[in-house]
Every structure is written in C-alpha cells, then in structure tokens.
Image (cartoon, rainbow, N blue to C red; front, side, top):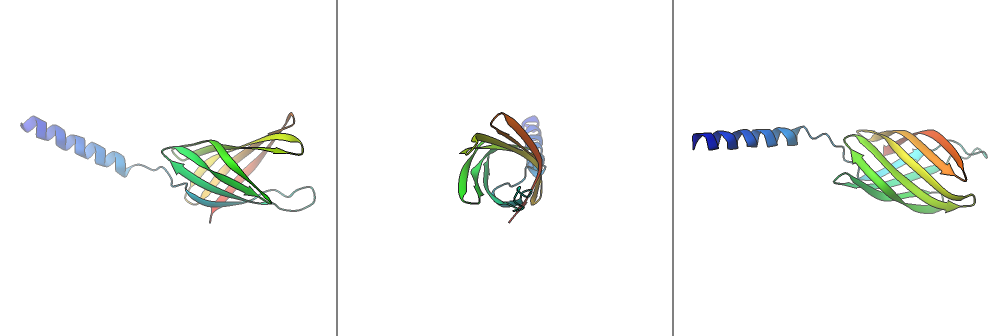
Length: 128
C-alpha cells in the first residue's frame, strides 16, 4: 500500500510539472501585418483571424477586398505554419506562412508560389 501511494504521489507531481511547463502560445485572435509596398507604392494591410486548437490552426485571412480560408495549419511548440490558397489574375497562388510565436508577435517567412514563380519575404504580424 505504501508503494502504491508513493507511486500515485510521484505520478501526480510529474503530471503537475508537465502542465506547468506547457509553453504552447495562445495563437487564437486577430493579427495584423503591413506587407511590403506594392509596385504602385501602396502598403497592403492584411488581417489574420487565427484559431488554434490542439495543434491545428484554422481561420481566415482578409486582404483588401477578399477573404481566404487558412489550410494545413499546425502549431508545434512556438512554431506556426499554415497556407492560404487563392485564385487570382495570374492563376492559383499558394502562400505558406511560417514563424515563431513570441507573446503577441509572430515573426518568420512567407513563401508565395504563383504561375511557376516563387517569392519569399519576411513576415511579422502583431496581435490586435
């Protein structure tokens, strides 16, 4: 009986310690990005509405006059990655956003593939 109580106590401490050290950031919320200026000098404002549950990231991205769904989203530790697939004048575009979540900032890269071309840019969003 003594060994059972000792084992139960150890298990309780182990579970409590693992909960206390969970550093998975809360990604759910509204995030804003001021992207690089377009060729016409306009700086597009992009809003991300993110929802994270159990390591899965979903939500929407709002750009100028369009809203797109987030797909293939994952949150592993403090690293987030998701895609936005859309159809525009040049055909299908896949934008893959990835970065490190630190408090109310996500900083990383956006990789854009459109019409057999690949673009890459730094990406930093801030929570509203």
